[in-house]
Image (cartoon, rainbow, N blue to C red; front, side, top):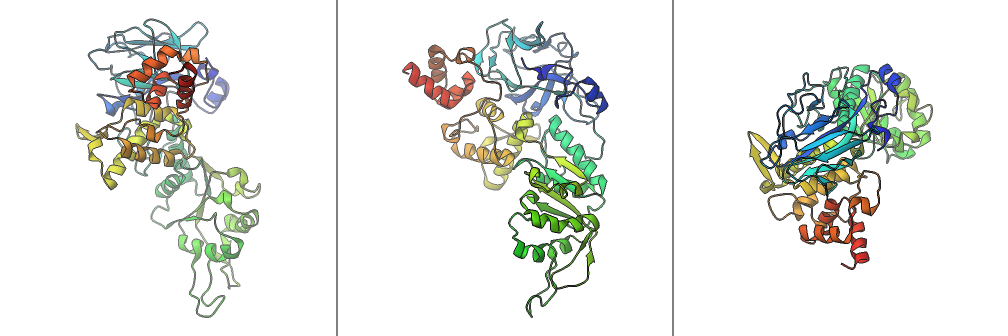
Length: 474
């Protein structure tokens, strides 16, 4: 078991003293509900192991009161602990606890089967688990193993009126600690009245963050101008950014207001600012310092009261004297940092696609809430795979899966798994994963010879299944 479960270590690798200094809560092992057959509205809820005593999950109402069970957000009081439902689930179905070596384990003690990364767990056997593992009660629930602080301490200022798991006022979806920390940073940036740098991998929502900063600021009713400047060459940079007077450089040319002129006293969002050539970054320094600039063809300086939001996935490419001009930084987390949000994002993306392009067969409504039917295999594959394009890549996968699924449930089909589903837990030997000839044959039969589904059931990659089939002569 790795040290990420040690309650004396925070998610940034700090000790207790550093955590207290930054007023961060210690990291705790947790299970996040990522799929539910009968209670999809609970997806995103967390079960935290708060003490050295085991945590029991099951139908018993009195089992989980001692553990922190709740919705990972700063929305006032945590909800009451609720048991699991399902006629085959026992009062005490599974046990989550710590070994003498402080490793975290799970043990199935009830009558319903429990799968750990697709492999059937033997009853009453303690199985070590780690961050990224998936625990599944077939036909009922699926949980993602994680480790994070139980409470997100926020400075306030970000709206929390949206329902749990739904899209918020600025288009952001998620209930993980990582996304709530980002929301808190957005609110802080909006209050700062300084230039802001928004960083994050491609597809993490930097544009949404920038719009939220504007919407929460005292400039919300003033202009918001968003421009991608990565393609601006030195020859057109001045004209596009600062503008041009009328009749310059040739008679009859119209006045060009420029990006800065459009923003006036509002906010100017310069996307992909890390792609700006060094000599062009230097041109912006005076403007960032004092708001001074000259339009092409003019001799006098103008002064702009606008604030700049720079967004980039490559902050290391900013000049050493350019980056500090952005006094406030907001970092948008990647999907690897917020895997527990993937099912919520997938639901929102699928509903958006249905609204624009059709596909109502995947949608069902329960108690006034629209949900999307997704198979447990599909959701498990989503939360365990790696992403390069983050939410943008997830949207493509959802769209492809909806097209490939013939029934009323978005399912895991071979057509959408050209790349192997990467397990996020540390690599282990095939034997530990249960990849024997017998287990492979059984998994393939159970999955109708679908290699991708068999890989998910066994907790290995699709390529490993293909190699194993060749190795075992299947």
